[in-house]
Amino acid sequence: MRATGSLFGLAYGDAMGAPTEFLSVAEIVRRYGTGGPRELVGDPVLITDDTQMTLAVARAMPTRGPLEPTALERALREQFVAWVDSPENNRAPGMTCLRACELLASGLPWRKATGETSKGCGANMRVAPMGLMPGLNDVERAAGAQFQAALTHGHPTALAASELTALAIHWLRNGMPPAELPSALTDRCREQRTVYHEDWLADLWMRPGVDSPTEFIARGWDECLIALYTLNGVLTSPDREIDPCLRTGEGWIAEEALATALHCFLLFPDDPLAMLARAATTSGDSDSIACLAGAFAGAAHGFDWWPAEWSHRIEHADELAHFGRLWD
Image 1 (cartoon, rainbow, N blue to C red):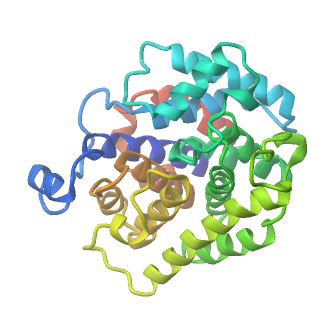
Image 2: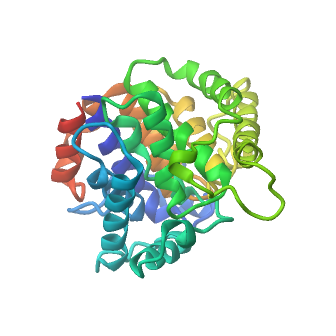
């Protein structure tokens, strides 16, 4: 039940990181103790826009492949507009997502609605369904992951980081040992550096100072490669006591959210509570870091790795379980 484990892990991390997102590590330790938060609070346990938008992407996915850009754009637009109009959209959503979704709601083509210069972590905090849905070929999974980001975040690094995040979840779900993941992702950056999915991204690359689609997308892969080099360097001397944001970034931008979530996961690959506590006890975008770390861990270890009673209290448990069953 690895797809189920990933979706619930994402929601658990999101919920655990939400109360600590705008606190310093010192403030988190004063509030929760040295180890940070270790329990989910509330009944139901509330999630944030990270899980809300993950479910929006999940609802937009077809029951089975193939993925096709026109149909997916229509379904994503419908779900993103429903999210932005929802009375439950009161969980500190990101301004880039809000603005782009409002423009999508107005009927603008996605190409004009997206934030062209934004590479915020809103691009990849929601991409897990692209990694978990079975039956997609490599191009569909990669292009679909980039495309769901492109509707709101048009920077090339947002696209590349979203693909890498989806692939990390996909590879872990299919049995890749966690320790092999940084190297595999680094190789992917090199292999895909000049691959531009024109059928999906159309003329997104066209902007001042960019001469070709390959030049555009290479910038994104290069920035992700730098983030992964940093992660690989940190993992040669791991330290569970240092705030991960000080070593791999605060997670507000897409490539840092990927790197720091992986950092937290790989510090505690076999201890779910310590891993989520470390991800939530960070000075950056704690809920997005923890939600991605939870998605990675759940994909690697499955649903039964998490405390059993959490699944009865987490918000949207029925829908998380539905998509988990569908993709398992």
